Image (cartoon, rainbow, N blue to C red):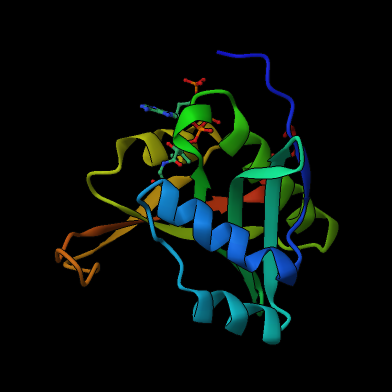
Length: 155
Ligand SMILES: CC(C)(COP(=O)(O)OP(=O)(O)OC[C@H]1O[C@@H](n2cnc3c(N)ncnc32)[C@H](O)[C@@H]1OP(=O)(O)O)[C@@H](O)C(=O)NCCC(=O)NCCS
């Protein structure tokens, strides 16, 4: 564990190319540019970035959908993983949810993505369902996780 204290801020639309570049460098294209643009246009986007020396080293993407928040992805640059950065980003979304009185958070994780599952379970997310062959690239199953925030006020 390094002593890293990134600055967390709401993502700005002009940071989209840096996000795309970060996904490319880390060989993990989770979100397309068009899907990010769509989220920002619909003003449902709840995106936070983690910056070190003004460079984005992590992001979390979520959407406000009526009565709940859907977390789309969280990515931390390979060289900075396991330093609590995803946890800090996730806390930012959960605090945001509390501030706007949203208590239900949902997300999907690949069946084989153990680090992400551990991350979400650490925050109290519970498995509620499996979507068979959900991911189109390799037909991997998705685990659906849910967090009810009224039971988790100590972030
Ligand atoms: C999953 C990911 C976001 C975790 O980011 P991170 O900044 O390393 O996570 P944190 O340091 O905040 O770790 C929080 C918890 O997650 C779990 N975790 C993180 N990395 C892990 C690993 N490699 N193996 C097992 N558990 C892991 C642990 O429970 C950890 O808590 P601990 O430090 O008390 O053990 C990061 O590995 C990543 O970017 N992966 C690629 C993208 C991805 O799969 N995103 C999620 C799906 S969209």
